[in-house]
Every structure is written in C-alpha cells, then in structure tokens.
Amino acid sequence: MKKPPSLIFVFMAVLLFASDVWARDWYVSAERGRGKKGTKEKPAKDLGNILKKLKPGDTVRIAEGVYLGRGKNGSNTVTVPVSIIGGYADDFSKRDPWGAHRTIFSGYNQSKNYTPDPSLFVDLSKYSGPASAIVVDGLIIDHSGRNRYRSKKQLDLLLPANPKTGENPSPSLGGLVVRVSKSGKFDRGPRWDITVTNNIVMNTHQNQAALSVSGYKGSTVHIRNNLVIQHSGTGIYCGSKYAGRDDLPAFKVTHNTVLFAWDSGMSQAFNIGFDRSVLAQVTNNVFGFADLYAVWNGRNTPDLLFSNNLITGARKGDYLEFNTVMNVEDMVDEADNLHEDSDENVTELIKIPVSTAFATAYGSRVVVDRAKAEADIKASNSGANVLRGMLGLPLRAGAVDWPKGNININRISVDDAVAAGGKMYMGRGSQRPTNP
Image (tube, rainbow, N blue to C red; front, side, top):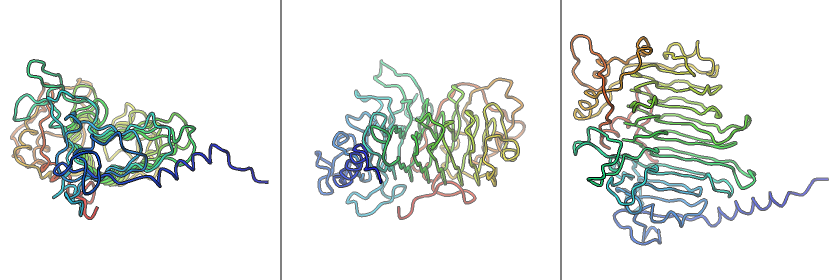
C-alpha cells in the first residue's frame, strides 16, 4: 500500500503552483518610467523602485538606458527568485543588449545613499519559499560611475573615500552576485535553476568576484556568453553554500570572455576561481591578462572538467592547483584535480580590438611587484612586449620589465568592452548576442 504524500510535500507543491500562477511581468524604462505600476504602458523608472513589490517567479524587463539605483545608490538587492532581462527597446518590441538597446547599471559616487553592495545582488540566503528559476540576462554592469578616480580622466581608481570632497570609496563587493540557500524551508521540492547569460560586468574592484554565483544542494547553474573585463580580484567565481558531499551544485561555464584581472595587492587576480564543493564544466571560454593566475583551483576542487578554453597573458601562471603552478600545456598531465576528459586547452596570441586610448593607458600601467620566490615562474604569452602587441601598441626595443608600484585600474568604456567581448577568439569566448 502506497503511503500518502506528506503534508509538508503537499504544502510545498501548492506554494510552487501558486507562485507560477500569480507571477507577473514588470517593465522598467529610464526614459518613460514613473510611479510603481510597472506595466508596459506605465513602466517604473528604476529597478530599485520596485524591488519590494517583486514576488517569486516574476519577470522584470528593463529597457535601454542608464540606471543608478534607488536614490542613486548604485545597488539593487533582490530577495526572491525572479528573472531580470535587459536590453529592450524603449517600447519593449525588440532586444539588442550589447548593441542598440543597452541596459546599463551604474551609479553616482557622491550619492548620499552610497552602499558598497553589488550593482545587482540576488540574495536568497534568507528566502524560505520553494525554488524557481533565476535568470539574469542582458545587463551591462559598469562600476565606473560608482568608483572614485584620481581625476576626471579616470585613469587611476582610488579605494578610500575623500570626506573633504564628499566622494565615497570605490565599492568592493562585486558587480553581479547571485547567492541561494535551501530550496524551501525544509530543503524539499525542486532545486535551484540559475542562468546568468549575455551580461557584461566591467570596471569592478572587489574583495569577492566581479561575477559570482553560489549555489546550494542540487543547484544547476549556467554561466554563458558573459564578458567580465577590467576587474580586480576574481572575474568569475563558482561558489557553494552547501557543506555536503553529495548532490553538489553543478556549474556549466561556457563561451565567456574574461579579460584584464588586476592585482590589488590582496593576492587575488584570477580570471576564474572555484569553491571546493562544486561540480564544474568549463568549456570554450577565453581567459586573458590575469596579473596572477588565469585559473585558480586553490581549494582543490575535484573533477574539474576544463576543455577547449583559450588562456593567454597570465603573468604568473595559467593554472594554479593549491600551490602548484602549471602552464596550459602541462595541465592535462600534471593536474591532480582535473577530470580525465579535460583536453584541447590552448594558448595563443590574440588581438584585442580596443581603442588606442584604452590600450595606451593599460599598456603603460604599473603593477604590484611580487616576491622573488615567484620570479622564476613563467606563463605563456605573459611578457610586456607580447601584451603590447595584443593591444595593438608598438613594441619596445630591448628588454622590457614589468614596472613596479601601486595598482590603479583605468576605466574602460562600454564601446571598448563590447568590441573586446563581442567577438569570439579562435571559436572561443563570448560574442554579441543575436536574437536573444
């Protein structure tokens, strides 16, 4: 005789059904928005203005324009599972998120409502309802408006505030962050399904990661066709809020481009990094210009499937596994924690199609001088002249040493970012979304 379903299971199923039935679409337009109806005819002016009205399963569609957050605080914290989709024309008839209809999340450094929180923080650590899909698609997150720079030229990012001028510190908690915990109050019901796609995260300084997703037990995470560019710390981080050993959150990281990872002096300058308690498949990505290591597996994430990726320009090493540094060519043979199907990773010189102004500023930068113990570590395509060639700058005669000094991240424009990440390199990396 079959046992009847538990009351808890029935209750969770009812909640999930109800959330789907009552979910609605919200519309946001910087140009036409007013009030909080959030309809296509009368959209809201900013995502931050309707955050408290969102319900599980809702979809927010955001038109082209620059969004500064509620009170120009530069940050939006979402506490229920929703889909947030940008890149629409102002009448919501079509999408072109990296082209004609860019949805840009920025901020105002001297805002009285300043917060260091991420531009978009989907924080479900205290959410106790049933899981539903989470989607973040087609946003451009540009921290340059939130950062503090030495001058209007925006060549040198400064970290602390300046009370005399009213300038706030540069935010340091990431650009796009998704964090989930249990699926339902009793961890029952469907598991999390998280998709982060077609986004650009740029000009970020952080102690965490520019683009970070932390799953929970049984979560499925898709991180695809994103560009992360001009960041300190880690570019993409695959994290976990689950301490178990079975049914780990499973990540598929594919066709992303991560460029220009700056070392801010905290021993973090990686294109991608991993928590230990995850399963990860990383394929067809481009990881370039990391001041330390392109791939950080410092926690010995087991069975990391790493295939068909392009790594170039890492200063200290292509792959770090705990405390062992390897080049691309040696990973398959020497790494203990790569899945046996890992293969076809390459290193090649690539030309980044950025403006001369950005290339000159980046190519003339100063970087942190690391300990002499690292002096004998060499990575493929990491020399200064090679870097200048990749950026289209003239080469310098004679020996070229990496300069010594403090780190200052110069701003990259949205146009330069789209040019750098809008095309694939050798069939790998991101590209401008078409018919998203």
